[in-house]
Amino acid sequence: MTEPAVSDPIQNDEPENPLPLATLNVALGDRSYDIFIGDGAIRQAGHLMQGVLASPNTVIVTDENVAPHWLAPLEASLNAAGITHRAVILPPGEHTKSLKYLDELTDSLLRDGIDRKTTLIALGGGVIGDLTGFAAAVLLRGIDFVQVPTTLLAQVDSSVGGKTGIDTRYGKNLIGAFHQPKVVIADTQTLDTLPRRELLCGYAEVVKYGVINDPAFFEWLQSNAAVLLDGDAAARREAVLRSCTSKAEIVAADERESGVRALLNLGHTFAHALEAQVGFEDKLKHGEAVAIGMVMALDLSARLKMGDTSARDRLIAHLQDVGLPTDIKTLLGDNWTANALLDHMGRDKKTEGGKLTFILAGDIGQSEVVRNVDPAVVTQTLDAFIAAAR
Ligand code: NAD
Ligand code: GLY
Image 1 (cartoon, rainbow, N blue to C red):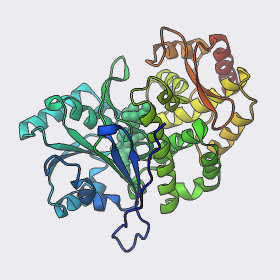
Image 2: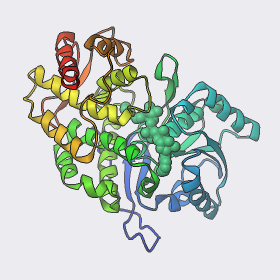
Image 3: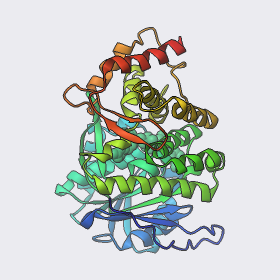
């Protein structure tokens, strides 16, 4: 496995922010790139991206929630570095990750003029990052893009690793491409304007890295979650750095998800079934579904005798401490059955030939890909959650 290097930190030039940015490299040969993490990174964005731009022409793609807070500081930083820019501001929300807005975005970019050396800058959460990255992958047969993630989820997950795409009526992310960014600039100060519920959704993905392969990080989170979620700069920089380090290692080892990258889907098969059952409504956000999904995965692991239930119970305790859901009490409807949820899992694109594959863990940090899981045991887990919620 290629070790990502954590290089000497760059000094942040804002006197009120003494913490340096952390840096990390995603090692992918000629597609390698740096990730810069910390409070105030956007103020240095122009300088940080200067070396990777094919020309000084950029277009910022962002959304209506992010633009009022973070577009001006980014523009000022680009101005200071002599980088030209214009902005496309899209509506917020998952529905923007669609053919309709891909059409609007590419139309606007082509109408106002781009060339093969133009770089797109995705300023926003995973929706803007995935859409902009996909537009960059297909425009003029591929142009560069830069990620400036502004949600915790995007900073620890979606901005790293090059998965880009849009949703379809048949499911999420079914049209897409692998297209790596040229650099990722994760300004943790942007989390100050993020609604608490969105912050918690991203936090579920942070916890995921501890459960996948880093029990020491899980323990660190147990001690530091409160200050991190309350905005402590050092704690959130550390959480984003350790999450990105974990993701960078996995992506460097398996960029196209033919093996170990599947570990990043811990909790996601259950999560997607829950989201499909709820109907992708605001009632259950993806990160909340992942939190419940991880608990279900550890419950299933215990039923398959991979370990006892103590890992599941430690996870439940930590998620509840921070205010994330761990059961389906607020979701359950009359039509909820184990079979209905299993049916949704069958439609998830992560199933292989109708056989169920799960990421399971007998203990915190001991995750593995388990194929051909007996649907009868999955039913036991689902029945137990449904019974507990009735
Ligand atoms: P999002 O992009 O919809 O952002 C959540 C909300 O927060 C939106 O309303 C947005 O406008 C707002 N927002 C963003 N930053 C803000 C800020 N700093 N201040 C105030 N408001 C802000 O959602 P998300 O959770 O960031 O991303 C979810 C998407 O990411 C999904 O489409 C999912 O499929 C995708 N995803 C992709 C990958 C990948 O590897 N590419 C991985 C995980 C998730
Ligand atoms: N979020 C899963 C992945 O990037 O592979």
